[in-house]
Image 1 (cartoon, rainbow, N blue to C red):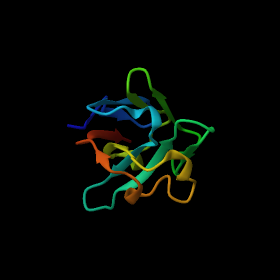
Image 2 (cartoon, helix red, strand yellow):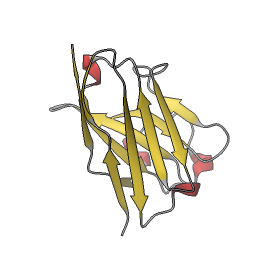
Image 3 (tube, rainbow, N blue to C red):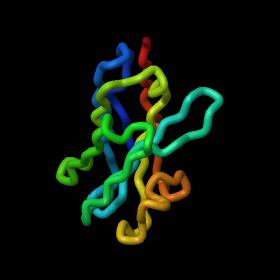
Length: 130
């Protein structure tokens, strides 16, 4: 059974930092593109960042580019998201996701698309106060 479990969410003031982690079990992430998504109450889930195994394929949404850093540890089957210079607009539930599509077929047009990903975690909440 595949499980993705997020951790590291919490409350922080604007300008602060948080580091989210996602641990996979029942699944080896080594050959998979992995992503972070977020969703506000009443809003749509949107792609934040994604990282594929090879080829330097890392993508960020414009809203977080330059502030967030996605990384992975294939040996530990973990995915991280370092979030810096947080803003109130970053307040959301954050989700980890894994894609079973061949990573070489995932380019910038679909890397942050929900339909690219098959497995999802339950989410971790991030609240940024002004």
